[in-house]
Image 1 (cartoon, rainbow, N blue to C red):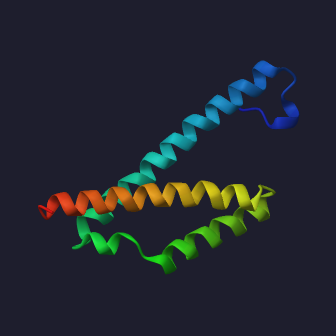
Image 2 (image 1 turned 180 degrees about the vertical axis):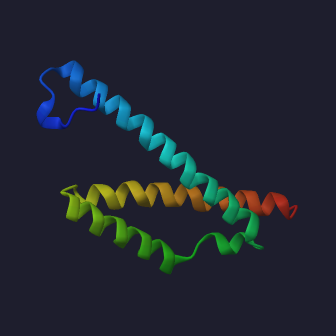
Length: 101
C-alpha cells in the first residue's frame, strides 16, 4: 500500500515510502541511461558528446518542472548538471573506444 506523506504516521512508514521511491528513481535512471547508451552508438565523434544548447535546454526544463512541483530549482539544476556531465563523459569514452582513439 502506497502512503501519501500526510498518511504516514510513523518513521517506518516514511522510510518505506522513501525506499519505494528510491527504487523507482533507480529504474527511471536506468531507463534514461539506456537512451544515453544508444545516443553514444549513434554519434560519430567524441566531440558530439557535448551539445551546450541541449544541456541548457534540459537543465532549464527540469528546473522549471521542479519549481512547479515545489522542489528547489538550484538543487535540481545541480543534480541534473552532475548527471549530464557524467553522461557526456560516458559518451565521449564510449565513442572514442569504438573509434579506436
